[in-house]
Every structure is written in C-alpha cells, then in structure tokens.
Image 1 (tube, one colour):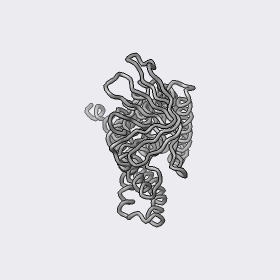
Image 2 (cartoon, rainbow, N blue to C red):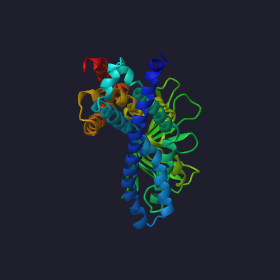
Image 3 (cartoon, one colour):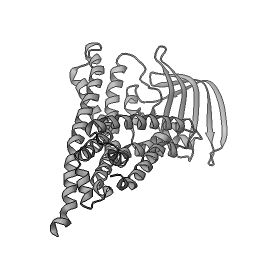
Image 4 (cartoon, rainbow, N blue to C red):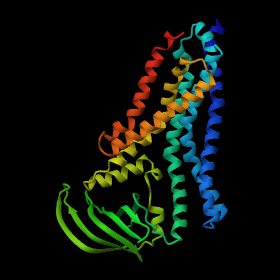
Length: 365
C-alpha cells in the first residue's frame, strides 16, 4: 500500500528528470547561438571602429539576460515535446496509464515546471533585463556619440530636467535634425503643458524648436491657452551626454516605468497604443512558457515518432506562435484590436486548445 501511495510521486520525479535534461541543454544551446550572432555584429566595433575588446565583452555580457529570457519559453516547449515524446515512443506512458494514472495527472509536473519558468521569466524581465538592456544601449550610444552622430534617438523617452520630458519621433542623421518633437512640462499641475514642433535640434545646452504649438491645459484637461511659434528655445543645464542615460526604449523599462510614461502621454490627451500593447506584452510573453507546456504536453500523444516528432513540432509551434504574436501586436498598435486583447489573444487561443487536448487525452490509447 505504501508503494502504491508513493507511486505517483516517484513518477513525478522521473518525469522532472526527463524534462530538465533537454530544458537546460536548449537554454544553453540557444543562448550561445544567439549570442554568437550578436558577437559577429559587435566584432565590427573592434575592427572597424576600434572600440576596446573589454568594452565589447561587457556589452555582450549585458545581452545575456535578455537573450536567456527569450530562450526560456523555447526551451520549455522543446523539453516538453522531447521528454514526453520519448516516454510515449518507448510505451512508458502506456504502462503508466495502465497502472491507473490518467494522462492529465502524468503531465502535472511538466505544467508546474512551465509555470515556474514563467514566474522566473517575468521576474527577470522586470528586475534584470531592463537594467541590462539600458547598460548595453547606453554603451552603444556613447560609442555613437563620440562619432558626432546625434545623441538623441528616435522613438524613445527621456527626462530633460526640470520636470520636462521629451519624445522624438524621428532623427535625421545626415542633418542632425529632429522631427515630430513632443515636450511635456509637468510641474505641480494635474495636466502638463504641451509643446509640439515639426523640427528641431539640440545645440550647446539649448533645444531649438521650429514650427510648433505650445498649449497650456486647465485643471480639467482642456486647452485654456495656445500659441504658435516659428522658433522656440528651451535652455537646459544638462550637457548633451547626460541625455544618453535618460533615453529609454520600451525594452529598457519594466512595466511600472512604462506605465508611468504612458500616463504622462495620456494626461496630455495623446494616444500611445503601441506602448500600451508593449505594457501588456511584458506580462503576456513571460507566460508563454506555461502556455507551451500546456499546449505541448497533450500533443505528444498524437505521434510515436519520438524525438524527431518533438523537434519538428516545436519548430512549427514556435513559428505559428511568434508570427501570430507579431500580427496581434501590430493590430493592437494600429488600434484594430484593444491593447489588452491583442497582447493576450494568442496565449488564450493556445491555452484553450491545450486544455481541450488534455481533456480528450485519455480517449487516445
């Protein structure tokens, strides 16, 4: 009786061991492959731009967390299909089910491991990856800055000092000219003052803006004062290089920081659907590990081809999943779908299919 009671736990440990081998192999393998491609690109900095090898090595280290986070969901899918596929191929699953253990019970450790990896991925995506990405981008910006190319990047947020925030839509590298400029002056008011300009530049601690509009909003968010200008100068005490550390893409922010920037835009009455989609994606994408485990586990019953089937199916699933995510994100950014729906719809579809397959799994013998 004691053996029967401990039997499922013994199987859990056995399945976990089968899972962890291909999981860690895939994490290390895919991370090395992706970093090798990046190293090939960064080698130009050494041989063409004469950047010290130590600096390039440090940049490569900064990319490890972000690369590892990308490989974790892929590794979960490969490990799920390879480990369970091997058990199906060798008829071990048939023996386990013949012992009275239902297939949904057999895959519980795999599902829980997928959930645990999702939790680790989310933590790393919030606490480690944004910082590492910011260090990498700042190093690259300093390299670019020394060549005289404009210090300001396009489509990034940065703090301009004195409760002032900038957003630049486009940067012309040939003329050092900035296009589609938005300036938010927050102060102690519920709504910011807004300055928009078609073009501008940054010279000697002075922002020079051309052909724009300055708006002052009242306490209810309505425009109470508006004026047009041909040329406007904003003097700041910050040197140009200071803006290097203040610029951030969405990959350099966690959800809290991105939410703060979104709220600043929305208080000014501006829509930023692409950033709202990215905000929800920062939670949806880490959950892909759990989704892949939920979807992949019952798929192993569809074939007895073992590892070859697992590898082939993994590639097909990854292709469909990430193409679908790209399409849904584009639909959300262009306001065809609500941002929350566009971020989660692919996960929901895969999860529903996975649960349906699990419910029907014991009908397959």
